[in-house]
Picture 1 (tube, rainbow, N blue to C red):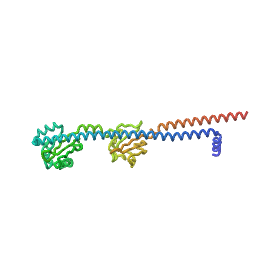
Picture 2: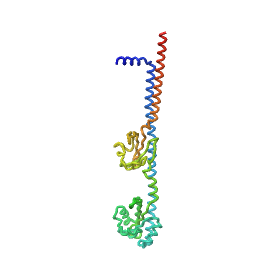
Picture 3: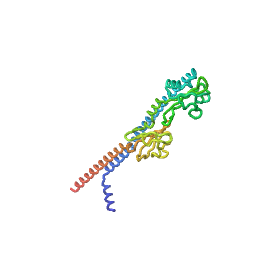
Picture 4: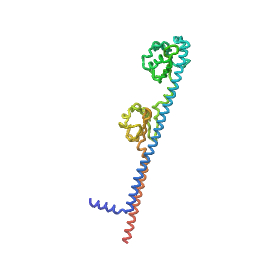
Length: 325
């Protein structure tokens, strides 16, 4: 064992100082280069992820603005139609009991339903026969219109809500009767709004949203349920069940590294309105260029040291031969 140590020590001592110096320089260069490129790679990916989060947030905002604008326009038009109906009834109250006339007016106003109540909120005129006798105060939704009995200036356009077995989007608007206390109400399918809402389906926002080569985006709600993913899967699943660490999302925005679905990635997130936008890029993609450069640098260092050592060995050999002569 001592012989081996002696041989090893002698071999190390035989390496010229210039080779040792070169080895130290190359090691420092490699280490500094590795650290700098790691920092640069992380900063570059951070910037890319932030830009994508901005884009996703902007898309969500545009969807919300479009839906709100169309909903407000739809409500204003519905209220105007209800006012027109109230004016017709004031001119000719008898149309309330005339089913055929109400149907003709319904088509004229381009609505799906017409309902007129008395001063007690009981429907006395309607294009839907089964609605006659209905008490507007009997359900929370229709009860909102009861104020029209007491306030002549009352007008209300409710937000569209699912209706019936097929959950069709439906909207009601109502105003006060002009001829006597009561309610004038119209109901209709806001088809334009429904088309916008279908186009602005939040589940489609992150679908196939690629960040870099393998990164992706996803959207969740405040309760941590996934609403939109790259592949359209796992919708409705909780973030923890999906694989995220518990309490990973603290504060209005942030970043963390975690292994999710077997892939170690850098995650960044931001809360936007009522949504949580998450974006990620795998670590192997973040540092792929750095790793390649490191291997090249390492190979260059090995070759340089090997060459220097070989050159030093050759010089010692030549010197020894000259001494023998």
